[in-house]
Amino acid sequence: MLLAGLRSPHPYESSTMKRTATPHLAAATALGLAVLAGCGGSGTDGSGSGGAPAAPPATVTLVTHDSFNVSDEVLETFTADTGFEVEILRGGDAGVMVNQAVLTAGNPQGDVLFGVDNTLLSRAVEGEVFQPYRAAGLDLVPEELRPAGDVPVVPVDTGDICVNYDRGWFAEQGVAPPETLDDLTAPEYRDLLVVENPATSSPGLGFLLATVAAYGEDGWQDWWRRLAGNGVEVVDGWEQAYYDHFSGASGGTGGGDRPLVVSYATSPPAEVVYGTGPEPEQAPTGVATGTCFRQIEYAGLLAGAANPEGGKALLDFLLGEDFQADVPLQMFVHPVREGVPLPEVFTAYGVEIADPYTMDPQAITEGRERWVTEWTELVLR
Image (tube, rainbow, N blue to C red):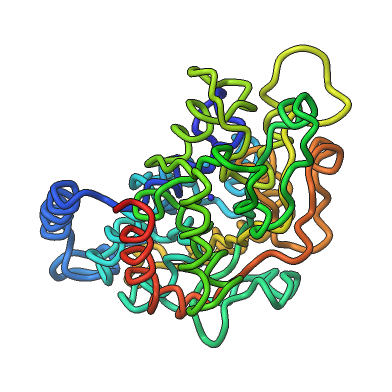
């Protein structure tokens, strides 16, 4: 989950953070999509009513979230190789994008959807958004990153939601930064952590899922009670947490007083990329590696796509070496294809999360709403 602008030391927020639309926005979206659906043809061959089927369009449409980014020269390579021009149709944040895709299932706005992650995947699958296609290059993706069973999507990138810490603050205070979830509830970290609300933020949801995975159904609530008692601060979204409350944000506007924040494992190299001045010996922020939840973003061929052949070619391209090598510095996530080297700034300033918390997408679907409701009762009321 992605560039939101040069201000962002981790731009994933704008695509995947504020996933929950307000009821008014959801209603407006549904109305607009109903109008769009009504304007479409009755078939998927582009021929309208009667007559011979039209020739396949020379354009393939990628439906994605607002912060999808790719280099122009990489897209030009796809066009040169396939003859298809790529039209990028951005559909808001990932949650709204998936809701739109469900509402238009079978009569989609494009050919390929990119940006549904493992917290939302089962919603799209149950909505019959996708049609099957096995992309070329899938065999070069590690088995643990592929969806289980016959889920008709391909993984494209991964990212880890983790607690970040302000190295300077902890050095000045002579306090060791936390490493694990258990550490965060210790007295020495009282009033130091800011997190995002899981009802309104994807990193907030990922962090909640990490605690459910770590402590189980019988233990996560107690952990959050202890964290709430230890002075955790809750805000709506990542930008507010990182820029206004986190003391280690180079682009911060409010001079934040919290040296711990829920962000991403790739935020430290992003701080270096977007920082000013000479290249530092180490990133100004670090990662508590025992707090991380693994996100995986997927793409799929939309059911009823007007240009299925172009869509298949685009899915092959998303797993190809050119696009996969472009992913890290465009969206600050990791490629899924084995053998694709990371940029030096990732290897020099980033950290590999060897054992992140994970959860089956179906388990997320079955528990998500209940966990968020219980979290709200525990932490906010």
